[in-house]
Amino acid sequence: MMTRTGSGRLIRVKERMNGAMIYREILSDNLLPSARALKMKHGWVFQHDNDPKHTARETKEWLRKKHFKVLEWPSQSPDLNPIENLWRELKVRVAQQQPQNITALEEICMEE
Image (cartoon, rainbow, N blue to C red):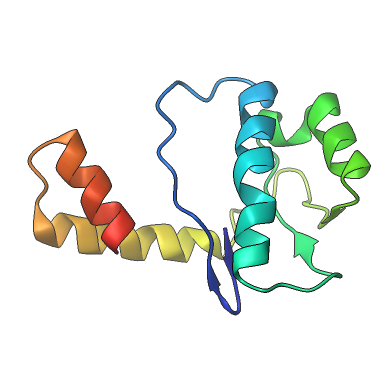
């Protein structure tokens, strides 16, 4: 997660994120705590793309029940999500440090 005031928690997803349920668990465990840590007030808008996990009926219902305002994302649109720029920057910084194993990779990512 990223906002104009900073970035939220970075977590390692150890299992394959192949279902909407896992996505909702990640949001549940991290989205609100990150928003609170960044001192975000009410009225912010959540953005994600049209990945099937994001658009699953259960995910939409969960977001609605939690009263999250979600930015509509046009289908077949180019990936204009600004977080892609943040991921690119993280990849560059990680590559410069050349982690030798998954533990080092995780530590570098968290540090950066």
